[in-house]
Amino acid sequence: MAEILGLTVSHFPYLRLKHYHLPSVLIGNLSRGWVDKPHLKDPKNWPEPMQEEWSNDSGAATSNVAQAHQIEQFRKLRAALDDFKPDLMVFFYRDLGETYKNAAKPPYWIHAHEKLDVKLFQIFGNRENYWEEDPDRIDTLYGHPEAAFYLARKLQDAGLNPLYAPESTAPLGLGHNALATTVHLDWDRREFKTPFVPIGVDPFGFLRTRNNEGLSPWNRDMPRTLLPKEAFNLGREITKAFKSSPWRVALVAGTAWSHANDAGWEFERVHQDIAADARRFEEWKSNQFDSWSDSWTFEEMEQHAQWELLISIILAGAMTENRSQVTYADMSAYWILNSSWVTTIFEPR
Image 1 (cartoon, helix red, strand yellow):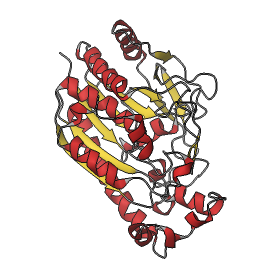
Image 2 (cartoon, rainbow, N blue to C red):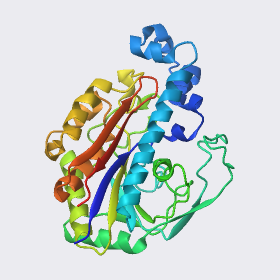
Image 3 (cartoon, rainbow, N blue to C red):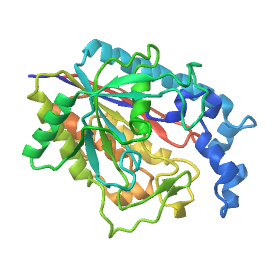
């Protein structure tokens, strides 16, 4: 029977830039956002810990510490992958309108590309990067169409209806969070040799749009995203499929937990919900994620800006089915850096 390894890794794109760019979401809102909410621009109105992190250097010192810590997390994940030696990786990642824009609005889909040529070292037009790599460097990322189509058929046989895409229409080749996950798992070597099957997920649904300030109003009558129960079950079925396959597979949730801009604009959030993330992280690292099929609601995700945890719920279902326990877990949360980053290594089984 094939073995499966589970991992979570931060997808935060600005980690690939110099450290002083890490607060870019906050900096963007201070410079050109919150036009009708000037009180949010005044650090005196922020929580005291956030003011301390921002300090008198626009958060540069805090960001330097945060980036250094996260790089060590990436290296731990790389070591786990090297020990496991997967035949392929499967990424769960957030994709909001990058692959399909307005052509389709699926809650999730499977990429079945053969290979993609991508630029990994310029982020949102910024040509400066952490390694001082040539921003025009082109890397070839290899997919695994055989495994992608195998998975699609297995999910169909389980009563699910996955969309699958032989070619990607994303302008960058893939959604930027999938690209970030790729780099973060090969931080030092940057060779990107392991083939992977990305599974894009729209964790917001309801035809909502998103910008630096948050999500558009929630019209509950619009088509929804996956229910937490459905996401959990999807993870279980993915594990079942690969357990009967010939491949050693690493299942990777490339995500972050709550985000300052993952709730409705009316919440006027300037930071993520660190306390809510910490409560859920206690369950996560204590292997109590097997209840996440039923213990989450959309209302909780909106209240605490935690919609993107839907991606971790998929992995929770997968690891529950695999009977894997957490062997390492770390949560890194800084008030000025928009989101909480969770690193996890599960025992391979």
